[in-house]
Each structure stands twice: as C-alpha cells, then as structure tokens.
Amino acid sequence: MITLHGFASSNYYNIVKYVLLYKSIPFQERLIYSGGEDWLAISPVGKIPALTTEDGQHFSETTVICDYLEETYPDAPLYPADPAAKAGIRQIMKVAELYLELPSRRLIAYAFSGKPAPQKALDDARHVTNRGLTAMKRLCAFSPYIAGADMTLADVYVHYVNSVVNSIGSRQLDWDILAEVPGMREWNRGMRESQIARTIEADRKADEPDFHAYIRDFLAKNAVPGR
Image (cartoon, rainbow, N blue to C red; front, side, top):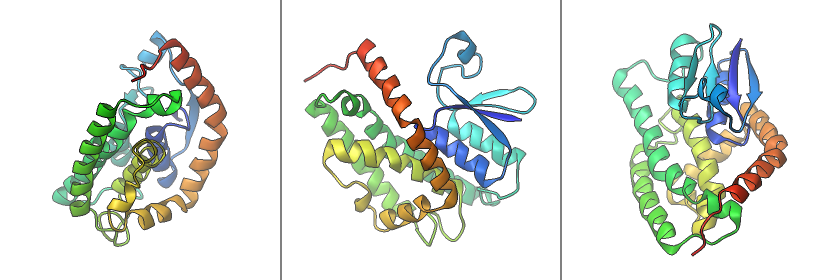
C-alpha cells in the first residue's frame, strides 16, 4: 500500500492527501515532523510530504508526487489531456506557489514566535504578493473551477496555498489578500465545503496541538531574531 509521510498541519501534505482521496487510491499515513538519516533516505532534503509507492520507491516534492499519482492512477484525472491546457494548469500552480504562498511562508516564524517581522520582510512579502495577485487575476476563471468548467490539480493546489496566505500572510500584513482577486474568496469557500476538504480539515485540527508543540520546541532551539 502507498504510504504518505508527513503531518496534517502541512498544506503541501494536504494537497497530496486530497489527490489520493479524490482518486480513491488506498493509502496509509505515517506521522513525521522531521528525522535523521532514515528520513533523508525517503525525502532527500528532509521535506514534507514524501510518498512511498507500493513497490517501495520514494518520492518527495508535492508536484512530483501529484504528477506520479496522475500518471499512475489515471482515473478521475486532474489534468486536461491537451498539452497546452495542462501547461496552463501548471502555470497557475507555479504562480500561486512562488508569488502567493512563498512570501507568506517567509513570515511563518514571526507568526509563531510572536515577534514582529522586520519592516523589510513585510515590504518584500507585500511586493512579491502583489506580483502574484496581478498574475492570478489574469489566469483564473472561477467558472466554476479555477481554470474553467473542470476540476483540476490547480484547484487543489491553490486552495491549500491559500490556507497559508490566509492564516499567515493576511494576518502579518493586515491585508485581505484573497479579496484582491475577483471570485477567489467564493471559489475558495466552495473548495472548503467539499467532503474531502472537510475530512482533511478535521485531521488538521486533530494534529494542531502536537504540531504547535513541535513548533514551540523548534523555535526554542532556533531563535527568531527581533527587529
């Protein structure tokens, strides 16, 4: 059976988990926050999530895992067949990752430590996020799905990117980021109400106390600088 390694508070873990559930692929979960050499043998740079296939191969990097699942389990496809349309889906995912999620992610340590982020960090995050928002306004259709009439991996990917943007970026920047893209909030609400998303959210909430304890311990050992 496939094994998904990671923890339920990770948005990237939840992207892969959503794909597994959407495609009705049997899998088991292995809870891990970090590890030593045994973990690096599965995830070479120690990133969450990682996947072990039925025949014992290991993969990390969320898009790599999702592409493997799409090609190995073609039922309930999450990419269009047309190469150009598929590239369009991947473009939306990459823009969301680099220009929405990443600037918010760089503020996570300040959010958890309670220390104010330096103004330069806030300014940089706002600048990069603005670039992403400009692109997303051009790329997203929300009719009803993010790229048009059909559900794609971009819907799953951006929904979980938005979880970090909402919980970290918007709060740190005091800015309703998702409201900047017409249709984004309504679409995001619809994604959140799906049965798969509700199952994943329940698991995330159950993991939250252990995850916060792990983060507190990590920050105690790796102090976040103040202003």
